[in-house]
Structures are given as C-alpha cells and as structure tokens.
Length: 348
Ligand SMILES: [Zn+2]
Image 1 (tube, rainbow, N blue to C red):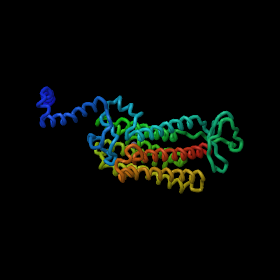
Image 2 (cartoon, helix red, strand yellow):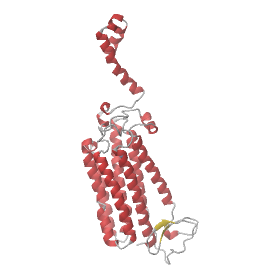
Image 3 (tube, protein in one colour):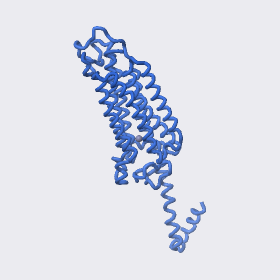
C-alpha cells in the first residue's frame, strides 16, 4: 500500500520521475502489475513460477496453468497447455470404454439366444470367439443342451474399473492446477482410479478361469481386492504424491499388476491344453508389456529428461504412459471377451 502511494506522489513531479531512484521504482513496479493481471486474466506460466504443489516434473519447462479460477480451469479443456494431451488421451479412452460397455451389454448370453439376437459364439473346437450379427442364423455351433447362464458381473466390474480410472485421470489432469486443495483431492482420486483398473482387471481373469473352483476364485479375488484397498489407503498419505515418491508409486502399482502372473500361471497349469487359455494368456502378455513399458516411461520421464522443454506440449512421458494404459486396458477387454465366450459356451 505504502509502496503504491509513493509511486503516485512521485509521478506528479517531473524532476523526481526522471531521477535514477524513480526509474528504479517504476521498473520495480512492473512485476506487481503483471502479477495482478495474471489473476484477472490467467496466462500460461513457466516451471520456475509455479507454487510447490504444481512442481511435479522439472523437465517440462513451460505452458503451465497455475491457480486459475475454477471456471477458467474447466474451460481450459478446449485450450492448449501442457496438460491438454493428458486430459484428452484418457477422456477419449473413457469414451471408447463407455461405447464398448454399451456394446457388450447389448449382447445376449448364449443360453438365451434366438434368431433375432446376438451373442458370443464358440466353435465346437473352441478355437475362436466372436460376436454374431443379429441377422445371421447360427446353425453350426448350437449345442444340444445349453449350458447354464454365466454371470457377467466380473466383466462389467472390469469395464467400470477401466472407465473410472480413465475418467478420474482425465479430471485430475484438467483440474488439479486450480488450487493445492483441489490438487490433493484429484491426485487421490487418480490413484484410486489406477488401483481400480488393476484390481478390476483381475475379475474376469480369475472369475472365468476358476468358475469351477470357488476356493481359488475367492482366494485370488479377495487377495487383489485387499491389495488394491491397501494401495488406496497408502495413497492418502500426503507424501505419497511428492516427486521423491514417484519411483515408489511406480513400483507399488507395478507390483499390483505383476501379481497377476500368479492366477495366469495357475490358469495355464490347469487349462494349458485349452486354446482359450492360451489365447487369453497371449493377450495378457501383451497387456503386461504395454503396462510395463508405461510404468518405465512414467518413472524415468523419458524423453523430456533428455531434452527439457522440447516436449512440453506433446510427446512427454506422461502422455506416452496414458496411451500405453489405454492400449493395455483395451487388450484386456479383448481377453475378457474370450473368457466370457468360453464360459458362456461351456458353463462350469
Ligand atoms: Zn496421468
């Protein structure tokens, strides 16, 4: 206040205005004016100007939004900044999974099929699974006795988990720049979403592989659910999302995902002679490869580490991580279709 008043008084005197001291004061006033304007009309800023809660990657140097008003933050989904691609990669992923869910829900189970419906169909040799268009009549694969209806809730749990993860991630990248409080909340939802995706991925794998073995079905499902819940609980600790804990976060979520090799290995020992088991394991290997590369990229922050500032808008590690997550999740969706087709064709 005093500083501004002295500036006003000085500006009324030409002599003072031209003095070295006044020139210094006038030049010192510019940052104040700039700061004020940045509040009323938010502009993108650089890493060095960020508050501590927004400093997550020192290799991304510019195009940051910092403490923007909420409305402006939400509308920034349509503008270009260093989170735009992160927001849209997972928002598009969410839309894809939403449409896949509608499609999957429109497919009638094998046991209730008729000539006007569609369903999962399996050949007698069980070498393929596919959706059969509504206007085709299935004559070569109808079994004499229809198997009992197989529940689909594990499949829908997976779809819901994937959609929750993708939507929370997108929202986190869009909104967390608003304030430290919003950032804290959105990061927790983001970590919960990652845990939900990993845990829900186990449901179709375990449920349909061990449909006829309730003991191992319950053992695996309860184990991964407890593991995921523990990860969410750990993520509530504030220090969890500090840059120093990035490797710990990567290892925690990687271990959750990697624990899937136990039920997958068990499935191959029990059903290794079945083409469905081999095919789903192939999909799962591809999925784990996508996730594995994604985790490494996330943890190492390549390529922006090599050329800081060159990948601010496009091509930085988190964007690559997002694309790999969607690819991995879609691969597991394909595996889930095979599981479902297998059990709906055969039952237990
Ligand atoms: Zn992300």
